[in-house]
Image (cartoon, rainbow, N blue to C red):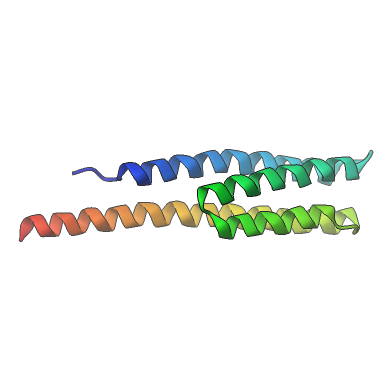
Length: 124
């Protein structure tokens, strides 16, 4: 009896690649926080990175996370004090991290429940 279906395994691998991408985004936001020269140039990099991540999430069917990326992209574009912008971006990246963790747990829990149901049927 397999613990995780191939479709779930693919989905988990996709989430793992998104986790790596999210670490990159977090790094950009932290670089923006300490940038003393031209923070708007780095904000442009953040904007492009959030846009690309949004497209990847949409293509994989994670629409709620894609909407969060759109919000972060707009936040990086807004004209506001850099401290406020960094706080909002940090919170948004934290929310994306939480959403990825929840999705990962949902996939593994549903696989466990299917396996448990299959085990119960085998006993009957």
